[in-house]
Image (cartoon, rainbow, N blue to C red; front, side, top):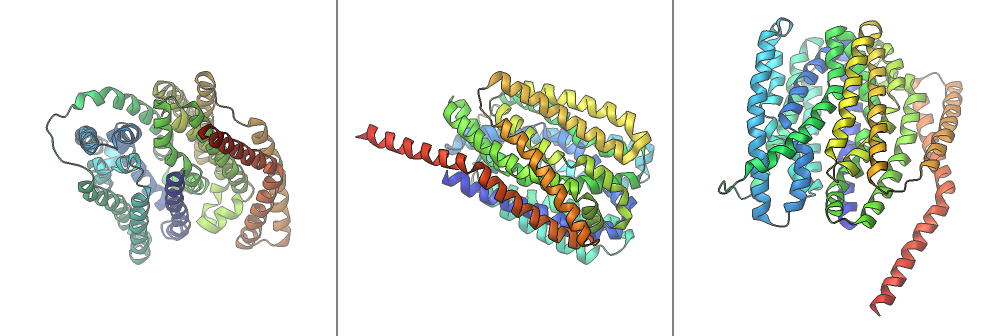
Amino acid sequence: MSDIKRNYFYNVLVNIFNTVTPLVSFPYISRILMPDGVGKAQFLLSFAQYFVVLASLGIPLYGIREIAKARHNRLSLSKTFLEIFIINILSSVLISFVYLLVVFNYQPFTIEYPSFLLVGLLVFLSFMNTDWFYSGLEQFKQISLRSMIVKILSLIGLFLFVKTKADLWIYLSIAVSSFLGNQLWNVWMLKKHVVFSFHGLRIYQHVRPIMLNFGVLFAISIYTVLDTILLGLLANDASVGYYSAAVKISKVIIPIITALGVVLLPRLSIAMSQNNQEEVQYLAEKSFWYINMLAIPAFLGLFVFADEFIWLISGPAFGESILPMKILSPLVLIIGLAHFFAFQILIPAKKEKQYLFAVVVGGGCCLVLNILLVPHYQAVGAAIANLVTELVITVISVLFVKRFFRIDLTWGKFMFKVFYVAILFSLIAMACRIVSTNAFIILALGIPLCGILYFCTVFFLERDQYLKDLLAIQRQKWFSSHKLK
């Protein structure tokens, strides 16, 4: 547990940093580039990111599990890493060729091909993303510190060099450099852990499971990236800007919600491979409690204070982002639950096929809903499509978990908490708006007040459960000591 707590600390630390960074940079960028500039930048980055997902072949999911199993033997670890890494290099070369074909043969893209080539570096060098290797080794300290240093340098560059709307290309260059800086650091540090011997490698054994994971990630990319691309193609840059502002603010806290799951993934993979049901139940209970403890107040806070968040972070020019943000605010909770059921239960248990079914259905919903709604409702239509898609995937994942596993979760408390927090936060928001009309003052009063009242209420409602957990631990220690005697 000490290792889990330490890894969790570093993962939460970097995710808090990743949460704060956009809150510092986006208010500046949105006022410099304005909705159409933000929309164009987001479209270019999303387009490249779609090909990055294709080039990754599902390795970020598969690699963590395989490295976690091989990490206690350096030769086996090196062999496993090199086999997977070579596959990733080949896929990056192939997908980069496809990317260039699309850019140079689709007329609207050829006009801005220098920008597409710039963000294309994300595709060309995507094989250098070896975070999966360090996550499998549970070296979250290295991942966290490296990521924070690179982001600080990028933030400094942003404020120093992006001064006018004409500096869009500089903004893109900084965004690309931030990614590549992370990955170059990762590759340089590999020599400490990997013996680079290419003798006796068996690459083909990984192809089938990687392709299965690729199917999952490809389907996920349909609804996580394609919505922005379709919005840019079917609407305009300004709509992408409004939607991007709503998505950034709505999802900014999600990495913190899923932080514990990332840390637990190697442990759950090992527990499930050893058929240790008690360990799986314990880890699942803690993770589920952690997710709903943070996600419920986060999503309701984003909903009731959506107006103030948009005005303060994005500026008055992004008024049309308010409704999409309210629609998207439940994603904090929905994605948190989806991450729990899929990436902490189904994936470690090698139920990729079941999760693949869920994301394929969700991807289909996303595609159909975006085509139907975006031309008429633009950013609002994209937000509705996004919300329905995530909800469908989560529900299907829950049904598969209930079918294959015996994991007891406190759903009754979960639903009750949603109900009382919604009433509590709504009353606080109304009271704050009576006191002031200034967005900063409303948030400065509302957020701390909501947080204090929420956690005080949770403590009194769940203190009996804490006492039960404490007694259970004491009983286990007593029985263990008597068995030893």
